[in-house]
Length: 75
Image (cartoon, rainbow, N blue to C red; front, side):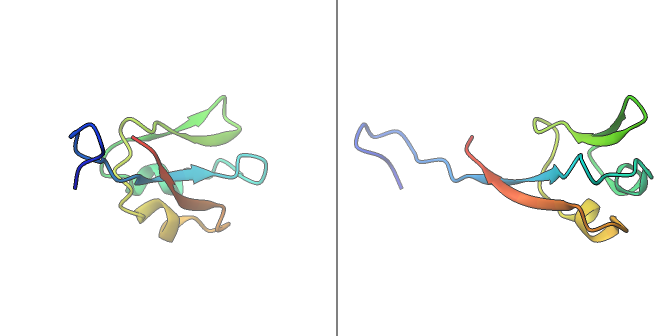
């Protein structure tokens, strides 16, 4: 599918988003991320590198606090 200018439309891709306020920095998410897209920021919370995240959802399933979600992000 293309837009009016003939350029192919790019669908938004899901990316992992961490509720940083509630993150306890346990590291479970970064251990299962196949793209190494997650880091613990200043020992306080997980942070996702959107350029590396492929939206597989492994971190969402692994998070014991259920504070990671997949959200569509425009390319």
